[in-house]
Length: 574
Image (cartoon, rainbow, N blue to C red; front, side, top):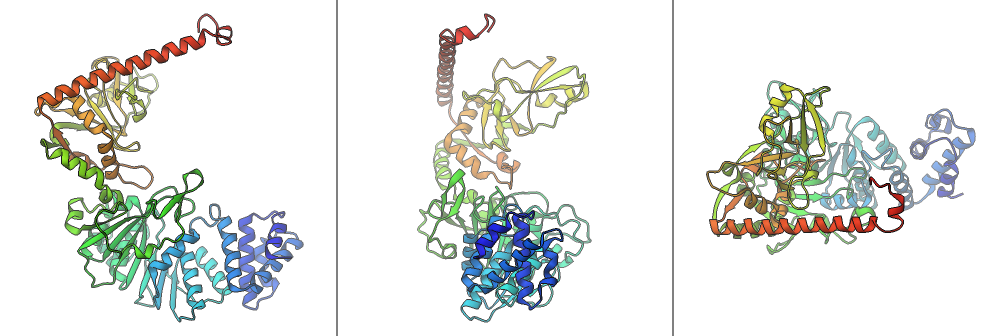
């Protein structure tokens, strides 16, 4: 029987496909060390029939007897098939792992840290062996993934040194030509007491007192302090954007180091097999390097990625990520741009890709702003961020809470869909977020940039039923000093080009969010009275068209209901 025929027979056992893959790999590793079947019996989980245990041993022997390229293909296929269930935390996509190898280059001394670097470490070691290039390779992970990589190293007869300490605590080899650092996303390091004080000091933490510390921030600080050669780090988009805690400090230190050569944005599913969030690669040059500009590259551009089933992004064949940080740019590329450090400082050290590749929208907006007086949004409006309201049984007041979905196609806020009963205390708490006619609402979280205006027939303040804004909406209440019409503000913010720009300002791992500082500093043109009057007339004309559309829709519904079989199937009250 072939290896794949044996696998098909094993699928009829009570073991899951992940357990089968683990059992075969562990058995093959033990057999490769000269251990007999009895020494590998634990992998059969102690409850399998003898026939299944024998098949696992036969499959392991078949794997060991195969040539290197077929061994790698069989192991990869097994782990790929189970990536989303059993191995999703560390088994990244094959094509992405190959691209990472290109970025690592022909290093003679390489370190791989954290579980997600397991596949690149394996491929790197096999490549060095295939080309007979002696290379020192260290892997620093955790017990589970270290054990699996150890088994794979035994199967492929690879020389990999395994660090016995946590990835962020260094021991042994002090210098590496290159490091691949792939920390787990969203992992809170606050309670990881073994993070060295010298690493924490890079994050502005002294004396052991600190709040939440993300693994990505620790990885950046660790790389700046300890990685003397080149380094490639993977982070979430949120780590490049969030302005609170130590993440902002980590980015500032990273930029000031001068070592950051490039930020390369990766779309969902392009590298990590079971995440739907945007990620990025940070490319650091060796210590002593000083880059005057940082290159931002969008790897989801159609030149580098294609969409497959269900919109899944995949790396195009023939693409080489390793070439993109160094190619000469003409200045017209949509996929890449070099940004000087001063400009990045002005953006608050935000390092998201869209922030710097939004060239079309920014240029168009700049041309418009040059033609009129301009003010920052915070100068024009009172910005009211709604507080959370909770349902209370028997509450004597009713709050209708608006969400982005309650902004209709015509730009008006329609009847809010969420109804909350509150007592007098909660009602008083909601007083400042009660919606008034002419309030402009903008979604700063989730459906970023969606804009609407509160109509004149909103319930008046003092009513027992009021309208309020939900927590994903910001209330923009005009101060009046600049005499800007709310309809003019809404028209500007809802423009397609401005919407594109607003989305470029957003960031976040799971939920896109516009930072308060970016919203406050948003430049708003102040057209003259004549232009504002034309805008008001155009808005009124458009609203009349929307009313006509609604009337036509109602006529269509009535015409349909009056015909067979609809008229026969409805009661007179319908």
